[in-house]
Image (cartoon, rainbow, N blue to C red; front, side, top):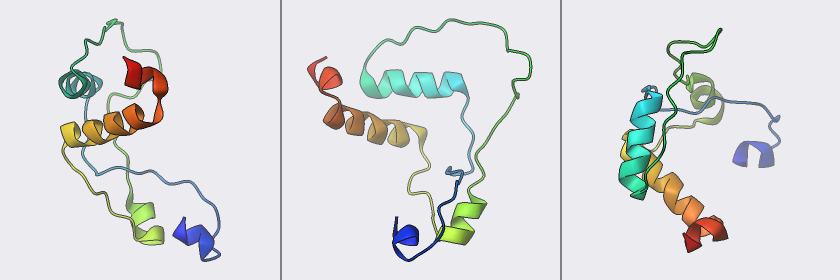
Length: 94
């Protein structure tokens, strides 16, 4: 936001910490953090799906002086879950 307030152009950036996590790792972390069961429907990879994708935040670092604050997946998920609980009345009631 500061970049925009300072007159910078609007743009799109990848944000990540350079560490990749698998879908299964993310689901397991979400289970652990939320204490909720998450159903998995295993299916074959779709045509065109990449085997590995990791966000490269180099452009955000260079243009915005942005650095990721957290590296640990459980910490990342916990922050996202707390935000959801504080901003979604349906989740707060669950």
